[in-house]
Image (tube, rainbow, N blue to C red):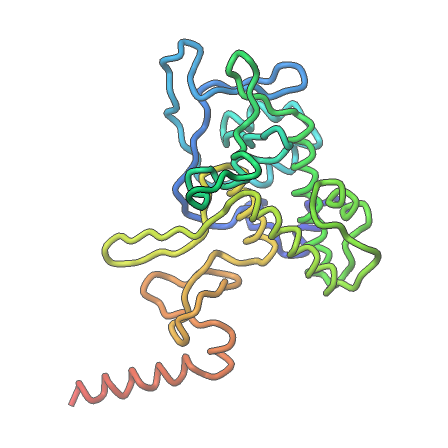
Length: 287
């Protein structure tokens, strides 16, 4: 059985065969010049004439996550993927930059022990990303989805997938565990991705409706967020109308203007009490 079939059986693939979940964000810049040379992806913000600046911004969309999982199977796809979705911005540590806070927001008067990471550059000013790093992160994405699919079906994650994650710089997995223990460990690995990607809360207010969610200004950050939504089968973060606490809804995001309730409030029958209260208020007004 193919991995796509396993993902479909676990309910992770949508009706169009995609992995992506609805997500709005600020978008991220795509370099004006991207090409593969030898064993590296080379890119720069300006075009060949040094006057063609960034004019394209990407937003999460169909194919972003699914196509990334296919890079490990065909590294020749890196260039076309990077032209459409942007680059990973790999630094000298082999991680996506910037994965460390810049000095400007460190505590005043103290020099950071580790400098703020920038994407790796050569002497010509081109940014360089090893194709091996793309393959590594593509393999990690597939491994996390494989393990999540197994857990959702009440099974263990396979040893070959844990091996990929153990060699990816993540917290290590120790021994065979129950699906519940696998889930806890996978969540720690996913949190590691979110931490190094610097994903953050985003607020968009149109003057009427306030939309609260997660976003990132990089491709890697948005891949991490998509993984989180996919693995949790959630469509983002909303605030409960009963207790006002944030929670992640499953299956679908509440429509604009529609009340939403977390599982705890639903268990306490808060939706019914609020509906009864509204009914009584409308009845009084109708007298």
